[in-house]
Amino acid sequence: MAEFKEIGGDAISNFLNMAPYEYWANAYFYGDQYGEMCSSLVECFNSWIDKERHLPITAMLDGIWMKMMKMASARRMECKNWKSFLCPKIEAKLLERTNKAHSVNVTKSDDHVFEVDTEKHKHRVDLLRRDCTCNKWGIDGFPCHHAIASIHCKHELVYSYIEDAFRSTYFSSTYSHGITAISRNEICSDGSDKV
Image 1 (spheres, rainbow, N blue to C red):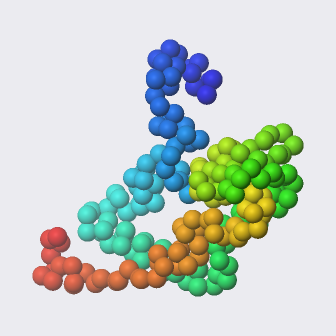
Image 2 (image 1 turned 90 degrees about the vertical axis):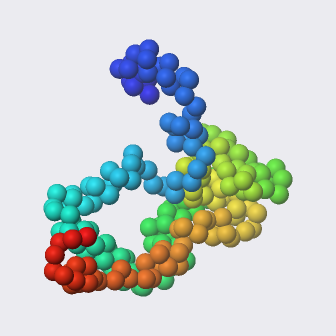
């Protein structure tokens, strides 16, 4: 941040000092990010359809349609083999954070608030608000190791504090309906390229 201010000079420093933190700093953003960040969904989509977007309109639409059909089909097949409650990458993340949670000391403040001591820092976890002062839970929507340690201290299931979006059933339901293949004859019954 210091380098950014140095390069931008007073104009950047003044702008950042006046702009509310939630508009430019992840730690203060109040919405759910679920661990995903991109500067623009349009940028992401355009990079995904890089070859198709330079084609004539009907060929571009056909190409995007096929790409989406293949992606949805591949993801539908992939999740049929999942046996875990959470998506595999998220299950691995949970295991990693659970292992890390064993190295902290937890003190219960009340039914929902805990103080978690690590070797270097103290953090406050509020399970009711799903919040930790490390801000990781707020940034990626997934309990940090401080929260997991607090949940264990309360003798509750960590899964009950994990957003539905991370569950394998939720992922599976997203791709449960295929994208229907359409023949060119269905699009243009007169054989023209009219849309």
